[in-house]
Image 1: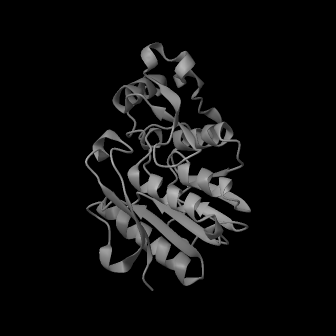
Image 2: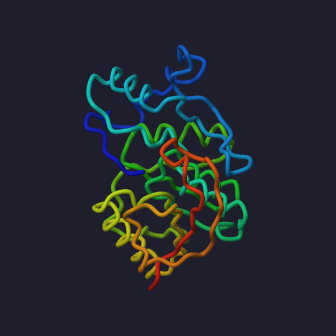
Image 3: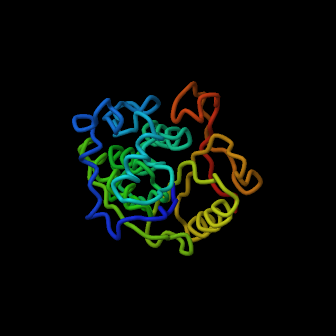
Length: 233
């Protein structure tokens, strides 16, 4: 998810997540490598307790930070990653962009499914560090790209993917414009979403639906269905 920390290091190179790994986290209050419930074969470094992790990160930088969205496997991302695992032909041999990548789950699934090249985009340097860490844990190559891409159209990516990106009104408006421009130039565009309040239903159509049960973040415990969607042009 794209969310800019209020006080963030200037580059991913200066972000170090090692102190927060399970072996270095007293009482397991950091991140630990875990199987993603809905995506067979993928493991991510996820938070034991996102609130405690945020406090530890803030203590590290000496300032306030946004919620570490990258430390949870959100339902929309899990469903889209599962769709890619179930339909590898969608990405196989193609250039893939995962925008607002969060943990990198979708990008990793695309790489495992045989994409020719995968780029995971975020503006949060902690997320980019997590993506790199998670890609290594799964033995795949994922390029991390920092920056706000939403005024563009995804450049030369043949497949554009986005999981759980309609979580605020302002984000929804910008993200939808980006995804529609990418689709209009010929990219295959897929979105994973469990029915967030700001999902623009009339401008997306359902490609596939999945029944889910208690997967993802604690906030998503009651969600029972999530969809894979694409823009209506």
